[in-house]
Image (cartoon, rainbow, N blue to C red):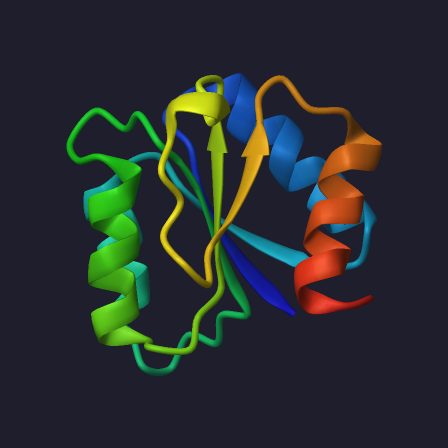
Length: 116
């Protein structure tokens, strides 16, 4: 399963991708919403999940998720935020609070998608 990981912090993104790869998922990286939208707009790119930071440099994660849902209406979305308690997560979308452990990330992704 291919997951799109959108995170502007290089180290955090690298760690997330590494963990997801170790769990058997194929993580595709984007450092900002603009890069993510290019990937989302490619009909040849399979995606099972969009995992996005809320605070991106070029767009809020919520706006990216809304645009992603226009392009791919059934794509599950997982927000990652250090401000999880203040985020209003739209129905049908998910949230994980930062910082999170490898186990929390695994449990959240497996809970959304099932095992890879």
